[in-house]
Length: 170
Image 1 (tube, rainbow, N blue to C red):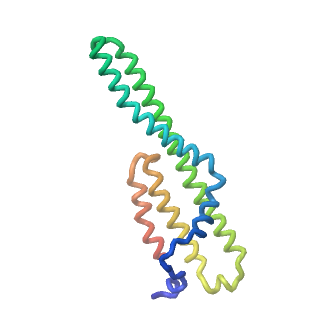
Image 2: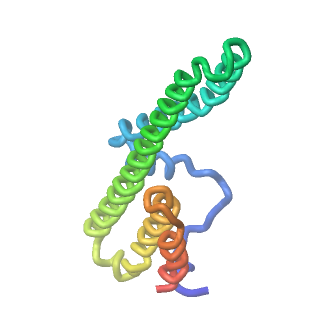
Image 3: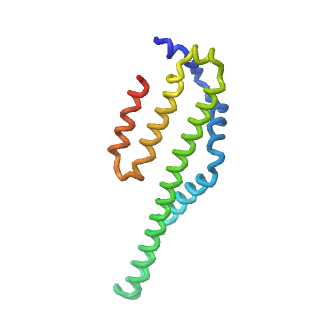
């Protein structure tokens, strides 16, 4: 066991609410983005439920009034629902991206500020690179999990995620 690993806190198997409270404090300034995220997800779910209702109404209309009558109305409704879903997905991706980058930035800034406040004896006992390595890995994993939707593919994100173990070794 290396000297760095022996400096880790021992995990006792209990869930630590204090740590989550401190982490959630970083999310507090971004409540609006969380509301946008939740609202966009809920509206997307509602709109996806409307597809079945529109299809049912179109089939019922075709059965009672004839095949060609009133079809334009249902096509227009279907197109409107698709537009709303596209807008919601855009808002969802934008809010998720902002949350990922802003909260990660705030956590890293607070960590580096705290490192500046510590006494020199602390830095002699622990390597600052060892302390900041965790922040880099969190940033890489967060980018790998959040970016595929916005970039259109998994290639770059998987490459970033593959670098995480290497970053831990450095």
